[in-house]
View 1 (cartoon, rainbow, N blue to C red):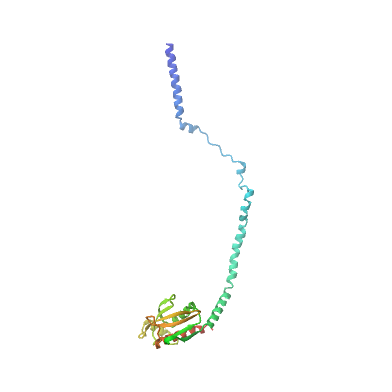
View 2: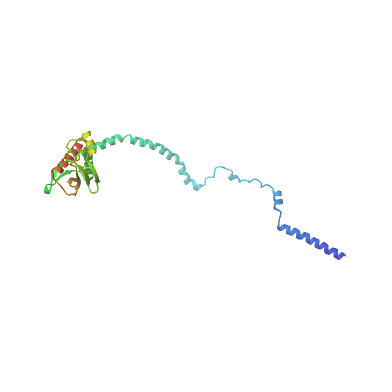
Length: 237
C-alpha cells in the first residue's frame, strides 16, 4: 500500500513539474504586459544637452565662407546701383551711335556704271549686308510690291509698273490705288540682284528669267532706286 502511494505521489509531482515546464515555453503575454513597468525617461549626457554644437579645430576653414555671406549680400545690394549708374550713360552711347551712323551715311555713294552689252548697274561703295538693307529700305519707301526676298542669293523679286512710279514719292492716294490694283495695267515682274565686288556692291536689274536687261523700263526702275537711295542718305547729312 505504501509503495502504491509513493508511486502516485511521484507521478503527481512529475505531472506538476511537466506542466510548469510546458507553460514556460508558452508564456502569458497579456499578463506580462499588465505587469510591465513604463520605461524611465532617457537621460542625455551633459555634452548633448548644449544647443550649440562644438566647433572642431579642423572645421574652422569651412566656417569662413559663412562669415563672408554678409559681404556677398552687401555686394548684391550695391550691384543695382552700379547698373543704374551705367544706364545713366545710355543716351550718350545712343548719341555716339547715331553720330557714327550719320558719318557712315555721308560716306556712302551710289553711282551708275555701264558694263558689257550695254548693261546698266548701280554701284554702292558698301559691303553686301549694308547694301541689302539700303536697297530694301528704298524699295519699301517707293511702295514697290516685293514678293520674294532671298538674302543668301542677293535677290529681290518685285512687281513694277513704269507708268505708275516716278522719281518723286507716291502720294497717299497713289499708294492706295496701287494696293487696290487700279493702275497695274503695265505691271511686270523684275528681279533686283546684288553682286558682291570686294567692299562694294553692284545692283543689277534682271527679267523674270534672271537675265540682265537694259531696256527703257529697266533703266527707269534703276533710276528710281538710285534717286530713292540718294534721298534716304541725304536725310542723315
